Image (cartoon, rainbow, N blue to C red):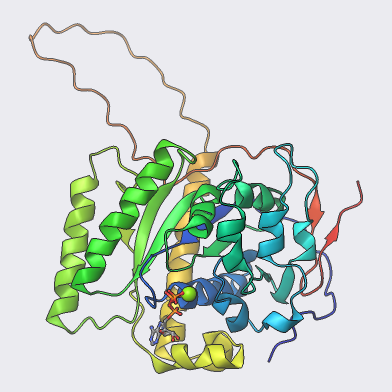
Length: 351
Ligand SMILES: Nc1ncnc2c1ncn2[C@@H]1O[C@H](COP(=O)(O)OP(=O)(O)OP(=O)(O)O)[C@@H](O)[C@H]1O
Ligand SMILES: [Mg+2]
């Protein structure tokens, strides 16, 4: 089992412009959220991207899957939510005290079962939904991808994930009833968009434990594609959502690896589950790089040509607007400088 606190291998300078903050969410249980967060995060880390997994589930499955067992956890997500920094980003429990660097380029903010109590302990706090967003703000300087593993409910922990995220990705199984749950989930995202987090978008669905050969699975995928297509021209948080490819095939190696505290790449590097998550990570990294390239391109200077007036009585066609990029983050507010050393307990940078 990998040691969660290996010695330092040197400081890595932050090399990213923006951070992709994603809540992996589905209120239905056992659909593949944790498996997707952990293995996708590990695959991206292997590609050299700096990735943080935030375990928002009191079951602590993501932490366990990455080899962090509850008994070794001192400060956890629970402590960070109970004592977050203030609105100015100062004070509170230091998130670096909770951070565990578990693999090269990969860290986790671990959960413990106490996290379940946070729902009731924070019930009357006016900022109860925005606490995680403040906790994560300084960590965006370090991590290019922040993946939150949400619990199977729409309670306060999930709402904190949605408030902190720019994107929602929905792992799901191709089952008819699952589609109805997804409708409810999207409505919740819509409500968040009208209040706490107007930038939140659903970027897509990952089909998990998928068997493309069954008629039922094909029908569910077709229904979902229709649902997304109908939303294309509407102002909805899921109007640019899609089904990610490849789907993740059912593969027993994915179910076995957590009990060893290993990712699927460590447990069975060439199994179909490893192949699928590797391919999905490549697709997501490419999608992200393309978005960043589009955002960094200066807008083309418009050269107005000579004006020609043609009196046809017809309206001038309006220029086609480019599709809105998925959840392009705005400028991050000032936050303390943080340096994290690969595989080592994190440290603050000297001012
Ligand atoms: N592609 C797959 N093939 C086979 N087993 C899988 C696959 N994906 C996930 N599993 C197994 O299915 C079970 C549920 O997966 P997982 O824990 O990832 O779901 P979850 O949505 O996070 O569950 P929860 O809602 O309880 O948090 C686990 O035992 C996991 O190992
Ligand atoms: Mg889970």
